Image 1 (cartoon, helix red, strand yellow):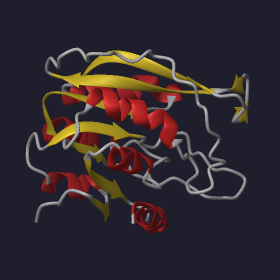
Image 2 (cartoon, helix red, strand yellow):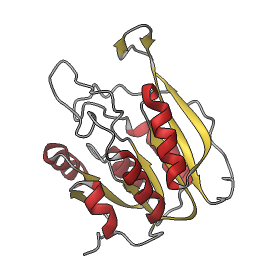
Image 3 (cartoon, one colour):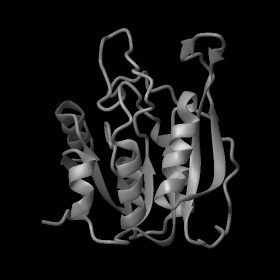
Length: 211
């Protein structure tokens, strides 16, 4: 079995990614669990957020299916930055950029007021420099309210990543697709997409959005 493009699959990415051929996707844009046991006030949870067993094998598979000289952009949980970086490097990825997404609101309160998200741009091989490289600070312009997913990302911050690090008609992969925002961004920019989402509830949400 292979996964066709313009599909979101309800599955564990560790079981689904092996269905993809080597170097069969052009760009990966994903928002994996942060390993922080995040649970908002409404009690929703994120599958895989309570353990790191998936971390190294998932990024190893992502490296395998990404084209030579391609990019992977991933959000990550900064409290476990060392574990994420270890997984990136073990897979073969090389960090080539670090992005911040400042918010106009406070998303949580701890020892600091949390007002930003962050992500790494990773390279496989030696991809060419984009014609117009992005600035590494992108304003979090929309507040989704996390209505569709506990860690929902605004499509507006994903669009420039898809546009800069992939080309029309290429295939964008999100193995932690959530409510489908990456896939929505890819579709709107004329890219093919493949999504994988473990939780049936969020898979249904993403499927409705994409339809």
